[in-house]
Image 1 (spheres, rainbow, N blue to C red):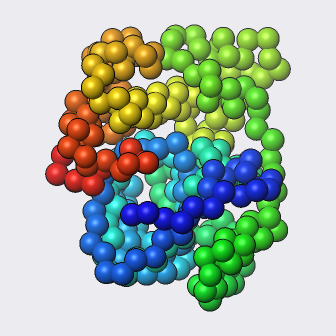
Image 2 (spheres, rainbow, N blue to C red; image 1 turned 180 degrees about the vertical axis):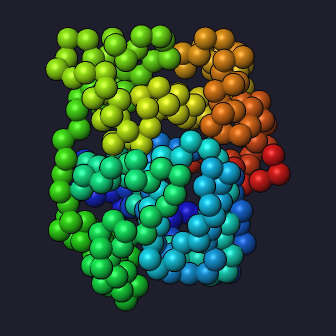
Amino acid sequence: MDAVIHIPQNELRDAIDYCWYHESGNMQLSTYNIPFLHQELIINFGGHFSVTGAAQPSFQYSRQGGVSGLYTQPVITRVKGHYKALGIMLKPFGLYRLCGFAATKLSGRLLTLTDIWGASAVSLTDALEAAELTTDKFRILEQYLLRKARPQTIPEEVLALQDQGSLRKGHISANISGKLISSKKYIQSCGEVFGMTPKKYVQLSLVNAAVAQIAAQPEMPLTEVAYDQGFYDQAHFIRIFKSFTGITPSKYKYAVQRGLTHATFPNVIFDTAL
């Protein structure tokens, strides 16, 4: 599945990594998706397009769109029939940064565009569907988001989790030491921005780093991957990895070696029989 990618060249880049559009004829596809570090918005103009996970009810994407927060459990995506969808890969804090929408509202469920932006979302989807050129769809989407933008400042201590996250005990105290933010406020801010505790977010980040490393270097021993990513030992690595992905690191490595992972997005596995 190769989509047309568009990277905003304006202030939307503070909240969005990229937008995508993909259209294809009759498609039958089922993928196993390891939680990734993006919030995602998808509008489906085609046939069946659903996402199912153990931690949330099944959701079928439609013209009303669907917005997901950061997952903490794997989900299965199924596509059947004409595939015609447009999406936004938001940064982990994207909706909060863009419009002040708390990530806690996305916990365990997907919301429609109307849930987030009200009735004006209907005119957006009408305009997107009517636009014939992909470039016009991206332009319409950007203009709408810029009109709706209510940029919020994210505490630097919260943003620091992306680069300075650690599994060591006392990390929260160390991260806010000497700063004008209490532990309670720090944890509360992480919930609003990421939809989870600092510890959970760090664990998810390190699992994603491990996934990327295994995909890029499948010949590397998993013990080395574990230590590279800051896990205490192999048992700790396996336990945390499986808690988010539903599979062991060795099973994921096996999928990589069999060529079953997406070439540019290794969190996607094309064989659900794991």
